[in-house]
Length: 160
Image (tube, rainbow, N blue to C red; front, side, top):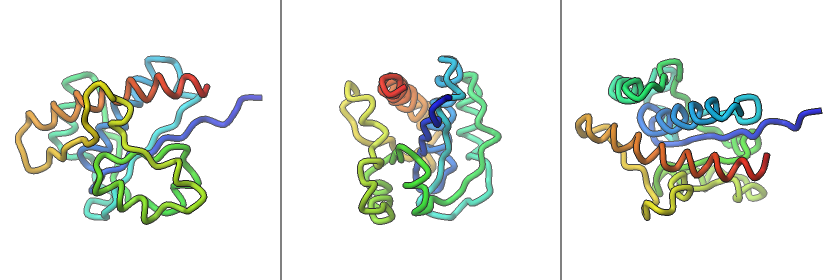
């Protein structure tokens, strides 16, 4: 009998730039490692600005340039029950981590982490929001997500 898959949730503010990018990058790495049956991904936002919308077109384009398709993802708002459904809830920045901490049940605080903690060599805790900047910001987000996703996958392999 197979164990239940590990469930990972990526969270930013609106769920159209950083968290779908992180989900897409990680999902691609999981697939390349042959672990899609063992690790399940999702993303959400702490605010409901874009519920039901696809990722920002600039995020889709930047990811596609690296062979990653995130066009199937749709924004949703994080819910308190996500802390029961997911093994890890990964915040893109401190502001969203704080919003998530307020939602988090007292028995599940260990499930909330900063995504960039999985890339300690980069010596940064946050993935900056590229929404109000140019295309280079979306490429930078991809670079950060790639590094953190590699670290996350390495960490999860120990649990599998």
